[in-house]
Image (tube, rainbow, N blue to C red):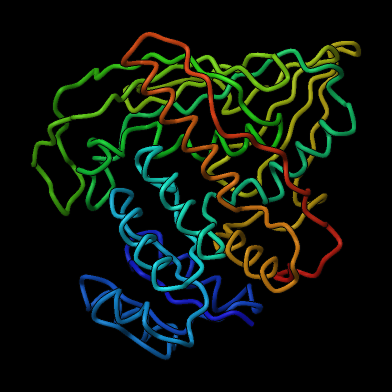
Amino acid sequence: MMKIGMVGVGCISGIYLKNFAETFKEVELVAVCDLIKERAQKAKDEYNVPKIYDTMEELFADPEIDIVLNLTRPYEHYGVSKGALLAGKHVYCEKPLGITLEEGEELVKIAQEKGLWLGGAPDTFMGAGIQTARKLMDEGVIGEFVGARFAMAGHGMETWHPDPDFYYQPGGGPLFDMGPYYITAMINLLGGVKSVYGYGHISYAERLITAKEHYGEIIKVNTPTHIESIITLENGKNVSLLTSFDIYSSKQANIEIYGTKGTLYVPDPNTFGGEVVFYNGEEKKEYRYKSEEHFDYYENSRLLGLADMAKAIEAGRDGRTTYKQTLHVLEIMDSVLKSARTGKVIELKSKYERTAPMDAKLPHGIL
């Protein structure tokens, strides 16, 4: 059993703590650390975590810890992950890997030089929804792939998030916040990306916070909040991607995949489950698939990716959430923004090969 030290006990940590305690018994949380000590103490008390550290450096120095779980804010991911890697720890980081391609590449270089694993979120693609869609596609249900549309359309975080400012700064925005879910689902369903062309702008220069914690404060927006891109896959076909914090309402499905036999509607990649729908154009008939009837992990199973990485380290097999995936996703996002600035098509350097599908026969919580 690999032992985990958690850095960052903010909003996302609650589901990780719950799943450590209730679901994934092949990993053990042994320490927590947060800049706000009260948060770490609360996690320690509620979930019987053995150790609490005042600084991440103290946590990194703990010889009992095998993997550092980095749950800090996106612009802190690079610094925390780098420190953990230099201390000789494997790292699993919340999305994204970094806020620039250069950050991601440096982290990968350190991990390779030290013989360490570097993995990261999102792991929602391992859930029942995306896995059911992948199985249908791999079985040829849609026929020959024609194209696809991935769309995340919403109106921002300031109405509910307790600390929404960073969503509107470099390293935030809809592409870096929600894009990892959509792009990770995309490459797991369709394969790696060859090139991108992007466009983006800021629709609202300021945002009014209505969440109670900072009610009435004004956010200055410093990153594009409406971004569209054309993504060319390694197979030569094109996919369109929309991510926006500027849209009040949309009836566009989260993911639509078009084939010569019909259209596949894939559930929200920010969730683990959901219904998969296939419209058979030849039969003029709709088929519905309850994903929980086909694969495990249809509830909120964050930690699944870390559990898989830990098991892969122990078993000597390939992992499903390694830097080979997270770096490719980061390069896609970085290149979309670079294309939006320059007006040029950006060719990717990294390559991606789909990892193994999930094994539906394994017991719950076992990887």
